[in-house]
Length: 138
Image (cartoon, rainbow, N blue to C red; front, side, top):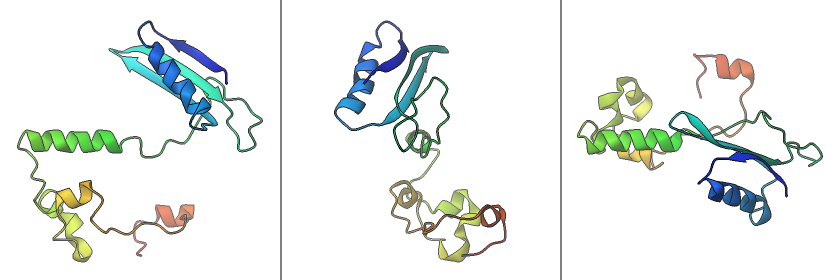
């Protein structure tokens, strides 16, 4: 697999790890960019961008990114906890009163952070109309 792009001196292990995703882990197409102190130090892409594997991934290929902020959000909350500004054993409603609706008044911050809150998930994709309707119930 040919990996395209550049890495700054000292960031060669990122290229090696990125290439290993294809060789050992079955990655089909991906890109990664890393900035350090406001300077781009990694800009790599490889593989294909379509389901059939016929269209090469290009510099700037658009991609949907899911769950990219969960780790950062959790780190922020844990930093607030470490500073004493967030109680993991407090009800979520102490910080977000509207959350208490529909029987969720006893859910703790730690329940939400460790995915044990038992909140419902979507079992089918929403239509655009459903997603935009602020009054739509379950």
